[in-house]
Length: 418
Ligand SMILES: [Zn+2]
Image (cartoon, protein in one colour):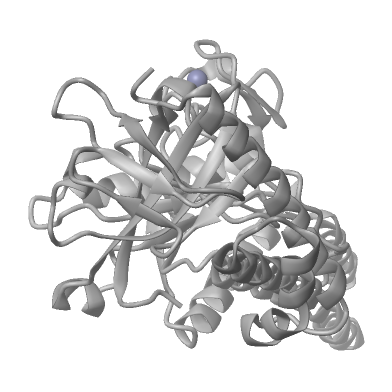
């Protein structure tokens, strides 16, 4: 799923005049309308860019003030959002027609130009605006490594309004080196936490309930316990039949879970799926032998299915993944007031405990790559609303990905210029 490029995003605030602000505001409003129009026309009919564009382009042009290239991009955005819905539906999740409410506009190289003097020119519903990037004073802002390097070229970018300011998420890409192409170590990482209450939770906030599996395993354990006591031959045969059936039920649940995990990795274009070290999972979750078997089986199923999609599957150490805050890194027993809740004592972040753990598991793998001397550290963690790298670079997903505030890095990181 990964293409032959490494993708990165540099986020910067823009310095805009009042007049420019009005134009950008208007452009965002028209963009949302354009995306919605295209979605309304294509919903239930088609979902590829090449189908949605000819279907919706004329209407978007006639009914909005978007320029021709932005009208095209709006039809593509609609196609992408609908595709996301179809993928979710195919993995059994409920979907409804996407609505476009986020205050963003997508730009490409035809609607946006970056200049060497750290200004950018952006298409609007009227004339282009040209405004300075509000970059950090020091030359060591992380944005510099992309802005100043010839190897990185500008690709699709997003303008976002937030709190009266405008932020440009500038997309960059460079071709992968041979090493990067041949190893799946670089790329986007999906973290997965396994447990009893929730069988699997991903760093993208996909929850697979553990209720059905727990039921099946208990039934099996009951049948087994009851029949072993009688100890006759016919009881033994019944045990084999009963266990066959109960284990088949459990296996069925595991297949659905492993399919869902691999689907999630595909949907977010992940290259690696990361679990915690399975040898310690029993202590951590107080799992019965049945659950331990289930985790092992699930892992093997994911490994097998992911491999055929070119996605690798790894394990990382599980120490502190449940007590560490995925937002700020603070680690303490007190961060877990209950089994299901996570609340950071330092930064007050609140999250579902398993979801917090899934992010830590994925980030542990990402960081491991960064610490290795022979590697350049190009991994990033897939979250529900975007991807993060350890140095704070954050990429938002396009509309249709249901942005969730909790995922986003602290404001000072998303906005290094303050
Ligand atoms: Zn915290």
